[in-house]
Image (cartoon, rainbow, N blue to C red):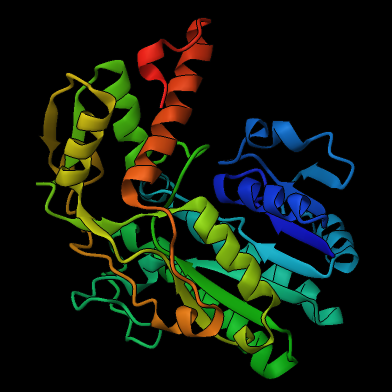
Length: 335
């Protein structure tokens, strides 16, 4: 099988590319490296079944050639991370909506199968958990840039479903809940890599708000397997699926657990949202997926526990820090 992954040099995209190569598939990626990095794909760059293009999906001619060439398109290219969304709302909206329009328009010409990755952010300010795929979405006001990401991804979903209903383009939508693992960067506000880096370097572990907000974290390998199965399942077409974990943890508990697992002496300090992001910033208190729909279709159940997730990120970060200072990781760093 030939697959195209937009945003393929990103955190999730690189793991997805790696998994398809392991299966013997031919993989093409396109990434403008705005949030992805060549380092994520360095280990597969020379693979005979791997081809990469440093460009944007807005390059209509190149994207058209790649869509025509491939059997399945995974559309992961998007603006990501709360910090980037707050600081660059125009880029967020334009990147998310225009890129999806182009991919779907091109896929429609030959009815290529498309999986669109969406986000748990689309549930907005809902306070009843777990979140089901057919729940109403509750967005914040347009005056708060924080909600522009959620709205733009909701538009992506509407577009994908519309292309299926009107043009019979086989589309599938996956709403991802806090995917984590090796290669994820904390640059744009991702909490676990930030906490781990702070703990390993002795910095203060910075918890935004009071730490009572809770999330469910899923290892990228579990997510990638689910994405592939959804992309290949005929009954998934035209549907929306949550992908995540039901193991809920507060952000304060997460900070304490990372401090314990790393043996860190870092302090845990609290930073008000207004100082961390912007005046009047709003967050979701809980974000818990209902996984019954995807479990019924493909038997999905996440296999990797929270502690295993944290240890994989700690090991990755320790190795990265050791390389930066040019010395091997001490024995105490081994997991």
